[in-house]
Amino acid sequence: MHRTQLSLDGLAMGQEKLARLRRWVLGLATVNFDLEVGPKITSIYPPLSLSHSEAQNIAFSSFPDSSHFQEGSQTHSFRIRPREPVEGEEWDIGAPRSSTLDGFIYGFSCFTRTKDASSKRGYQQTSIVILTHLAYPSLFDTLIARLAPAFMSHGGPMLEAACHNIASWSDPSPGTSVELGFLGTVIHAELPAAIETQQSMSAVPPGRTSESDIQVLASICPVDPPILGHFEAVISHLWSIWECVVLSEPILIFGPSPFMTSRAVWWLRDLLRPIPLSGDFRPFFTIQDADHTALVNPRPPKAGLLLGVTNPFFERACQHWPHVLSLGRQQSGQEKRVGTPTGIVVGPSPGWRSTHKRYTSRDHALLKQLEQACRGSERSKREASEALRQHFSSRTNALLVPLQRYLQTLIPTPSESRSNLATPPRLKPFHDAAFFASLKAHGSPLPFKSSGKQREFYERWLRTPAFGLWLARQEEVVQGVLKAMT
Image (tube, rainbow, N blue to C red; front, side, top):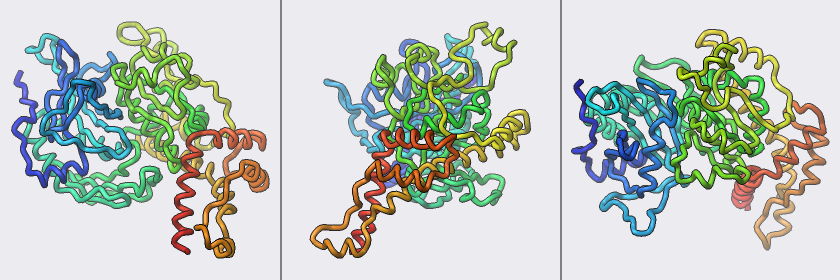
């Protein structure tokens, strides 16, 4: 079997082009399986300073951590925290270190496993990875899905072409619509105005200008294949899951593949918008991750943590977690008896295990549409998936309506501002009792089961770290407006 030389050696770009490339990506890496150490980064371009811990973390996160995958290719993504080198360890010489926006590095990987008679294991395992500081899952999933097959077939020249393509792009300016040429394809990408901005599918005009054109909303979960298939076993529980997400509850998301867990985690993270992200989220998390002992231990899990895993180890290690979401479709009695090809069921069966008691009512018309779509065509699944996203995005906005209404009463009037010229006008303090009086008088657009459930829900939400972040952001906006008026 002829093996394409999968190396980035020999790639070279001028400093100006390198700087333009790094506006979008930190580096493009190849990861191969080493019989002695496991997954290992074999090349990276442009050169990127990585500590041993970071390099190991990227390598293991780039490979599936499960036995379900046989042959072929599959994409997934991960999020890791940059690590300083330990004592005595040095950075690679001459490799500039790029800063990240939110303190994390994002990886978008395409793992390929093919038969190879020249390998002792009988097959070749390789991942092509885009490392970036931008949390744009839909955009980078589109890129890696096109780059990896081309690179596996034609080697280094495809990476070189990809690097020159990216270096020619315009700046990734928030709130803009950019046209990105990439390996013969034109990608029309809508970038969010801010990382907490809810992007709407209606913002993208229907239809394509040509067969090779692709349209994406950069910050949302990739829309293909439809997300509904991942949540088929928990459709009736999605309203409870949404409540847990907005209430900053930690959720363990278990799936048979990193493809499924990473998409599910990105999808759930998107439902939080426009509420600021107060917790951590890991689309695919392995036991080799440097943050493993910090995030998975006998203590209560951290607020707002969304952890996507495939290794059955986590089912045992996270038994004390209050919420476990296992992805996939509900298994029939026959499938449960047969299990995997080896006859062993790995990990929890698809479903939702939780201590949460729901506050709001389900949308029964949507629930019926979802159930019918699961048995229907690919088009019906896609339409139902988009309806599902719009439904919960609107619920997140509805959650904030009573708070925004009360906040309006805290903005000083022009006369109050003029009467106290000695100090700049400020938002009045937020008082829980006054807010709940306003909530009782005006209610919430959310369909709560009762007025008691409504108050309990908001009492819990005011105790979440998300509320503190949200209020701080609102104060910043109001202060800016008031300052401009004086």
